[in-house]
Amino acid sequence: MLKLTKDVILKDYQVEASNFATSRPASLLSMKTGVGKSVVGIDVSAFLLNNDKVDKVIIFGTKSSILELTNDFKNKLEYSGGYSFKPFIILDDASLFEFFKNNDNDIGFIQYETLHKIDLALFNRGLVKYKTAVLLDESHKVKNPKALLTKSIVALRKSMEYLILLTATPLTSNLFDLFYQVQILDSKIFINKTRFTEQFVEMRMVKNFKTGRQYPEIVKYKNLELLREKLKDICYDYYPEQDTNYLIHKTIIDNTDKYIEAAEGLLGTKDAKIHAARLVDLQHVVDKSKNKLKLYLNLVKKLLPKGLITYCHFRETVNLLSKAFDKFNIDYKVIHGQVSSKDRKEIKSWFNENPSNKVLIITSAGSQSLNLQSVNDMIFYNIPFGWGAFSQAKGRIERLFSKHTKFNIHFILTEIEYNNTTTGTIDYYKYELISSYGELTTTVFEANEVPKSKLQSFNKNLMAKIRKETLWKKSKSAGKRRIKRLGDCSNE
Image 1 (cartoon, rainbow, N blue to C red):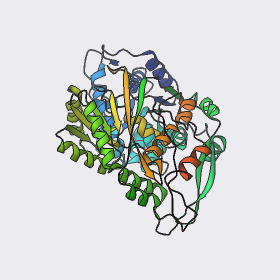
Image 2 (image 1 turned 45 degrees about the vertical axis):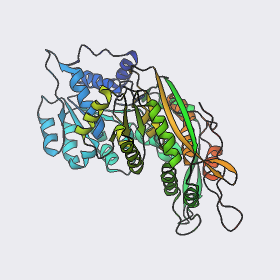
Image 3 (image 1 turned 180 degrees about the vertical axis):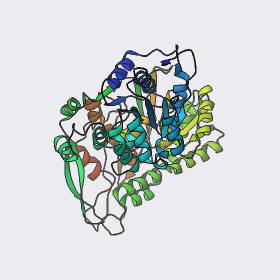
Image 4 (image 1 turned 30 degrees about the horizontal axis):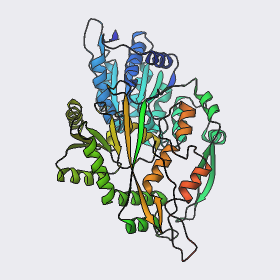
């Protein structure tokens, strides 16, 4: 019989979440990063096994989340009589067969990244023979219906006794992320994508200037209260408010000509880059601005005595900051996608044991399943495009059980002087984009997880603002483009 160790005392909301998940065959636990959803997963697993609801529990997660989860299960779960719990890692068909065959193996862990190595027919036979609960940690990873991962989970779905999704960010880029996850759990809730779109999303057809083909674009979400009502029987959400300050630090970039060149992007010609590619080009130009780097380094020096974290979306930016830190002899380390689990653990210990006068740089690969609550300052040198990535990143420090009670999220935002006008750059564009998810997340999940700006609502007016009136636009003369003013963002 499994039980939580004596030092683990569940909070009321964790008990509620666990009861919710164990009382139905399919559920989505949407819980803010840092509130202890891994403990809920542990309690759910123990309850289902102890009460003969299932014979086995299999937990899926990312490379980083499995590392954290196995440590949590090992430290917070034990057998009656004081025997320690040892996680069973499933790596291939042989270990999967061993897991199902051996009665002593209660809970198995699988990385999403290794699922392609496993025979799904073998997996399905095990699920059919043994009643199994499947938990998907970081479940937003299964949002893409065309991905092998999602197809594999869908293929195995009918043979699962329980399916429980755990995530802090069920929405990462748009509302369809949520649709696909719920569709895996229970296809009767939304029926199909067409019905879902008719009820909750307004689309318009937009012409691709390069190919000439038309494609649908989201311009507005609607009926969000109805959406929350539809989710209540399958989704448990918990997003407590925390004392978070969003601080803006502004400067004017010095590489104006390169920015304008990237903004024009050969718009309207056959050689033109797509919208997303031009945004990336703009970000790279802005990040290389000497003024932006100078502003960032001055902020680092101010916060350095306490220690801080910096988020960079691009490896090129990481290399840029690393060179600056080397030059000024600043003690730092980096966590990105190529950092091994062992090194990641060592870097985490290096930082958390004494963060004073240290900087930890993380990319999106380091923004999940990493507890860095030893500090309460985080700088976004550049901002992710989606609410999910942003929320995951700031969740490294903004944790409910942190010794800190206040958290400071810093944005390095840049402007450009052009035609006697000061205009916001790609940094402001992305700040507004992140802020635009406020209405969506607050209404659907009661999750006030984004900074506030002048533009609050994800609607056609916002899309017109950030897609048509910002960054670039055709002028009336000779096909030249001019940069339009984005609008000031006040300090929060």
